[in-house]
Length: 258
Image 1 (cartoon, rainbow, N blue to C red):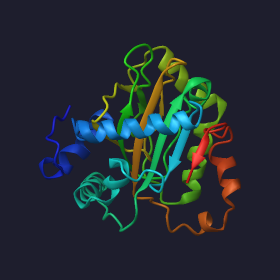
Image 2 (image 1 turned 90 degrees about the horizontal axis):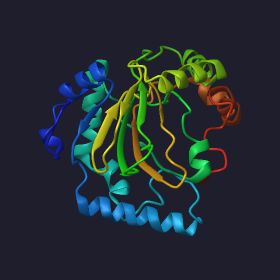
Image 3 (image 1 turned 30 degrees about the vertical axis):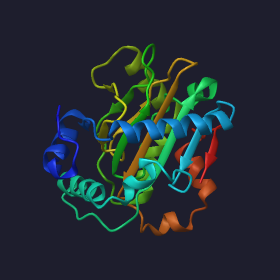
Image 4 (image 1 turned 60 degrees about the vertical axis):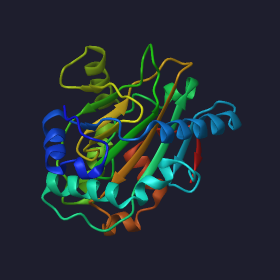
């Protein structure tokens, strides 16, 4: 496993991309310093309190001002690192484009309902920073069946992949891999403040369900949508896309902020 210094200038994107290809993920340890991490955790605790301790998901940075989660996608060094990893891993030039970011705060019964749902990301590269991870019991491990598909030439083919993965048969198969500790399924035990990279588009992935009283909170930063220019995608209604990609509506019952 790669053990890199905290600054982007010390990170070798070629080595990181190779590590993702070989092991399914790569980690930059202690990427977020303790002060920034503490500030982010305080933010999470405050918004959960306002929401009566229920699950929350934030899409985009607008609600995250004052935390590293707001600033990170604006830091040139971080953006360059993500683009360089993408280019090293795919051989393609990274297009100019904004980061798609999500903050997921899972807890209680709804947190369990919205766990163990394997999916493919729309974006090629996922960068994940854990904010809060349970210290005992089920710790909400990141679960990966790494690099099981290539970047598709056509968006419709990607939709078919996602629909197959969302089917009860495929979901049941992957859950059995988890229950039987099959080595093909990579378990990543995460540490708050570390930065984890994986190919979200290529890898079927989800999070392990935590104990009902625990909090699992992660900040995700996604880069490069291979099908951003798809004509099919631009004309298909968003509601229809959600039904094709994810009939069970993964975040059902969870407050969403945009």
